[in-house]
Amino acid sequence: SQYLPTVTVVLSSPAQRCLETAAALSVLNQVQIKVEGFLSVDSSVERIAEELANKYSTKTVLIVGHQPNLGLLIVKLLGMHQSAGVVKKGSVWWLRQRLSGNDETYYIYTVKQPDS
Image (cartoon, rainbow, N blue to C red; front, top):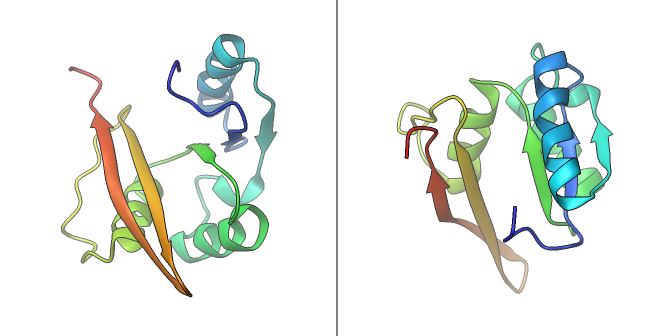
């Protein structure tokens, strides 16, 4: 939490477990949590990517959601084949975006696994 930018938007699935995780972040960082239905367990990666692009493309976003959708979103943003990415439950993936003209490229900044 000490590395989160102060302008981070925390988005959470409406699922109880996700809300509990997001609430812990809120206490540590005094950030507002936005509950978004597009992050629900029955959503699709396409819908998540579209909603994020439409509503949050210029913001730093922390997402609390579900597998396999978050893992699939990560590999989609990184331009990898969907079978290439293994995202462990409870892990934290920090992606950054580079903008060059109209091109945007995502890269992995850091990954923290629950057992490390």
